[in-house]
Image 1 (tube, rainbow, N blue to C red):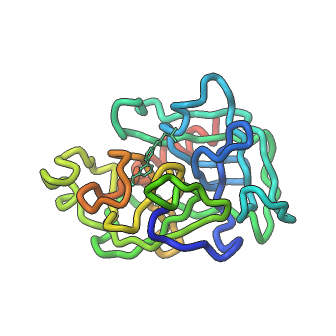
Image 2 (cartoon, protein in one colour; image 1 turned 90 degrees about the vertical axis):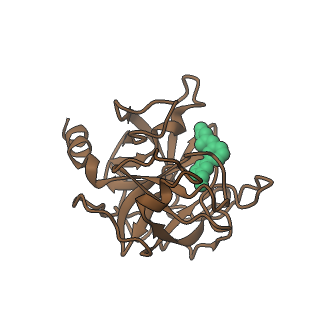
Length: 229
Ligand SMILES: CC(C)CC(=O)Nc1cccc(-c2cccc(CN)c2)c1
């Protein structure tokens, strides 16, 4: 998260850290007791390893009472996801067992109505992604508030030039933005997850490249189908 600030501990009890060999790779969030939603492009650098999911954390390193690392039983990328574009950039992770829910570990409701969030709506995004242009990685969860921008503005020739589909949404990226390691985290508007951070142009904090999110509502049937299977 660029231009943000340290989150209040445990006010986002749905946040997950997807880790490889004890290292934070991407964000994610609890959508059901045994399921975490994240971004498919987070699996790009896995080389056959499997994620572990850290829940109940504020600090990645320090011991905390409700922090717990879960093994992953299954990782299901959306069938339409690929490394060449941001399309269908969703990943469902089934935990080895149901997460123990408490004040620090909670499910986040997600939007099922497929209707665009109005431009200028201020939403919030959190993550353990890089907090400086030099790539400094935080130990604590950071967050930032960002206004939604319309698909037309986001698709402008000088911005994402028509690549933003109706299954994506954008927020302004001037100075305050998502960045490497924030992928997979939720864009939360009025307490409901509307989108999942995707890497897009892999540029951070540049107003010419607004942040891109996969909208969740268009994928409700896929999510329900996988969780029911
Ligand atoms: C395996 C993955 C971690 C690879 C990856 O995602 N790299 C990467 C590199 C630079 C910026 C970003 C990035 C993420 C989220 C939002 C944005 C743009 N606001 C950029 C992402």
